[in-house]
Amino acid sequence: MKEVELSLISSHQAANSGRPVILQLHGSYEAFGIVFDYLSRTDPFTRFEVGHFSSIIRQQLQKGHHLVAMEGQTLVGYIGWLITTKEIGDLWQNDLGKLTPVAEGNSDAAALTVVASRDRSILSRLIRGARTLNPGKKVYFKREYEREGKSTRKSSVANMALKSTVVEST
Image (cartoon, rainbow, N blue to C red; front, side, top):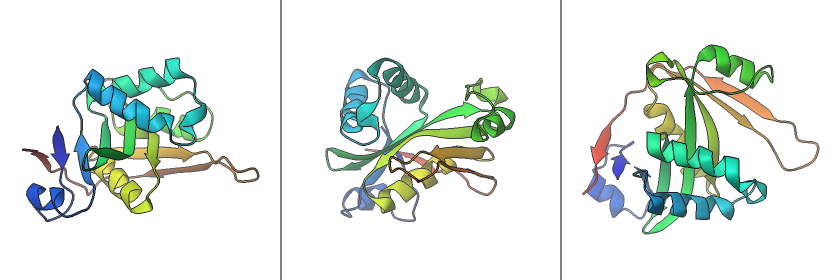
């Protein structure tokens, strides 16, 4: 596992601080099971069809396009993204095109496609971590609400000033 350190405290302090630790998992069956189990119990993902959704999660884990928040051995948050272009992202954000991936070398954007945590502070740390791991890329997201009468929220962030610090955990 890679630990993404987003503050000035050491990895050891983060693990012992009582705060959830933000990590990247290896693309293993175990990681897939842990993430899929968590998402299957988290709205709105409880209603998703397994086939296509499981393919998305598997690809995010295999490509390292994800972060998780762990409290001890318990998963408490997940964020996954797709690497794309600004052109594709702009069309997707405006409901004028389908979100499609591109090769890493051709990418200038990332779209946050799976975001889940019941804790807003963990959610903020996961989003910050995703931006950190995609320096110089425009980051897109859309949020669809379950409640009637609340419209879809769409946003993008020019991600120019962030730098990535990735530390191997022990």
